Amino acid sequence: MDTAAGESLFCFVKACGHVLCLDCILQVIITTRRCPFACTEIASILDVSALSLSLESTSKLEPTLAPTFVRRREQELACEFAEKKLTRDAGFARVKGLEEQISWQLKSIQTYAEELSSMTSKNAGLTKELNEMKAVNNAQSVDRGVSRVRLSLMKTEKQAIFLQLREQQASFKAEQAIIS
Image (cartoon, rainbow, N blue to C red):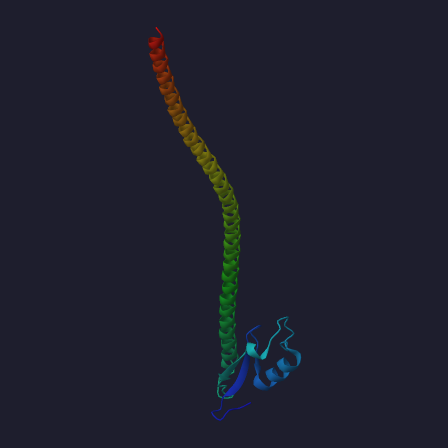
């Protein structure tokens, strides 16, 4: 396919690195989704990049330069392809590394969540035990208070009884003094 500027349009298949003319590549990729050079790579229309090449007539070039030009261009394209493949592979390795880090972080989070749950249940048990101890302590304090009140009442009753006994003794002595 020739353009108005005398350039030919070619396509570069990113998946495998082969170069084909535009008409051939469109027909082959749309129908078979594979490179016509029997590559194992599956290619879609998104994997094709257009190349605009100006091909000189071989009659103008020395006979040894035409194949050199084509070989050089093939080498450039192969280098670009290899560079892009390395970049892609490095990206895949980076993604895999990040996935492993995320997996490790998720496991750590799960472990921390389990520890938190365990500590929460232990805290609830300790809180219950503390409340029971406070209730027992309060009951003991009430018992001590009641005991103090009882003791105080007993002392008061004892003093009242002693007063009554003294009064009775005094009245008994007074009666004895009257009798004698």
